[in-house]
Each structure stands twice: as structure tokens, then as C-alpha cells.
Amino acid sequence: MVQNRSSMRYTFVMSRQEQDRQMAIDLRSDFVARPTAKMVEAMAEAANRPTGFGLREDQTVARLERLAAETLGKADALYVPTCTMANQIAIHLHCRPGENFLTEADAHVVTSEAAALVPDDAQRARIAMVLQENTHVCSGGRVLTYEQMAAITELARARAVPVHLDGSRIFNAAIALARPASDLAALADSISFSLNKGLGAPLGAILAGPKALIAEAVRVQQMFGGGWRPAGIPAAAGIVALETMIDRLEEDHRHARQLADGLAAITGLAFDAPAESNIVLVRPTVMEVEPLAAALAEQDILALPFGRCLRLVTHHEVTATVVAKTLAAFRAVLAGGDNSA
Image (cartoon, rainbow, N blue to C red; front, side, top):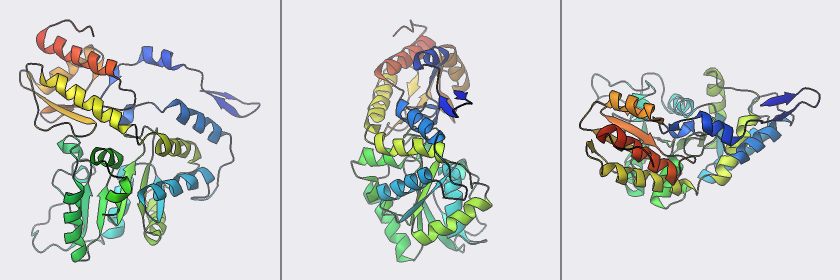
């Protein structure tokens, strides 16, 4: 990216072809995907617009927050740096000090956010919030059905306990269930989602809920050091993500299924769960996970060691050709075959 100091305008000078020659196939997560050309254009335009000075004064951020709230059927939304921060803000708002929230033992908020402690006497602990996660990352992107979510929400609401939905990849869940994301969001009092995972924006997340909760969330966001300014440039990419990237998630799911089907035909690999969204967890049975990941990296395929499994995540830069090359690399490593696609 080059800045013309005389006009204070920004231009991106490296072509996608030049970038492609420098990069391996990265399947460790969907947040590694580069922003689309429309996102880059929107960010460049936002860089040349005036920015707001105070919190939530930037018009691009305000537009993103309105769009996110409308998409989820919520009254208001807040743009924050990460989905972890969105979840932590929700926990802080729903739970007072000394209170507990109920979630699965392997929920992302437990395994990756250091947010949950098991009380000494769980039966006597006051539960101030129930947290659901959809899609469920630790189980390989498994999708909770609407009925499963509704049953949990019904139990919580019968006891006047608020529900927060960690929907980091909620649009993947919605596509898999063939339902609008607003249907799933309606089962929660607050919801978070990532803009930089399946949707492909470079960074950012959303916390959505009632106006009173989001107004208080602004204070907590600032307390957590998340009151970023100016934020219009990445917010512009977030708008493009919500406008253009949701429906195409089915393509990512299709590539994940193709990848899983191809891996299932390779000797030395096993599966503990099907590929229901854009995440594939494959378990090697003839070698350890770390050496397999290292050998694949030598073939320019980056996969993430994930317990006993390797995790591969499809995203908008994954094509049928990428799937074929990935399968060829696995065959070459596990069977000593030709890795040409």
C-alpha cells in the first residue's frame, strides 16, 4: 500500500498474482483469508473520508452497526476488535462478580478465552447466564439445530436467566440450517459474531442485543481497552462482508465436504465427526499430528494441530483446485505418492 502525501489518498499496488506466488495454502483458520477486492476498495474509500472523533461517531462504523443489528433482528449492535472481547463484554454485563454462567466444557469461551471456572459446588452455584456456541469449534464446526438451541433457551428463560450466543460463525450455522441468522439470534438475549472468520473481513466483531445492553456495553468496551478510534477503515470491509459474503458460505461448506470425502479415502486418516460447516477435523492413525503438520507444510499446505487431529478450515480463497492440491499433499505425505494435482 502506498500513500500519496500530496493528496492523502491510498492505493494498493501489489497484485493478487504477486501475492499468490508468495503464499502457501493456509487452511489453519478462515481468518487467514485476505479481504476481497471489494473490501479493499471500500477500505481505501473510507481512508479518504473524515473520521469521527468520539466513540461511535464514525459514520462508517455507525452504518456497520445498524446493518449488523438489522441482519440479526436486534435493536442495536456494537463494533469491537474481536469476538473474544464481544463475549467478555457480554459475560461482564450478564454476570455480577461471584456469579457463574453455564456452558459446555469445551466451548470456545472456556478453552480459548480463559473465561470459565468450575465452582467447588456446582449444584449451589448461582447461574446468571447461559452461553451457547454455534457453530461449535472444538467439535469441528458442528451445527446445533434450531430445536436444540430453542430447548436450551426455553429452560433458561423459564428461570429468568439470560442467554448469550457465541456466534463467531453464526452465518455458517444459518447457512447449514437453511434459516436466516435472525432466527438463531432470536433465541439469545445477546449475540456475538466475527467479521474476520467466514465472512472474510480483515478484523472486527459485533456484539448485538437490546439498546440498553449495548449502551452499557460501550462503557465496558472502553474499560477493556477496546474503544478503538478511528475504526471506519476496517468497518468499511465489515459492511462489504455482511452485504456480499453470507450467501456464498455454502461454497465453503461444499469445499469442506469435498475435502473430508477425499481425506476419508486416504489410508491412515480417520474422522470423529462429519464436516457440517467449513471446518474439517481429521485424525491421523499412522503418524503423530505434529510431524504430519510439518510434512504438509513442506508441501506448502498449512494445517493446524488440534489435539489428536489436524484442523483444516475452508474460506473464500479455497477453490476446487486448492482442495485437489491439499488432497494430493496428504497422499504424498502418507503414501509417498506423487503430490501433483
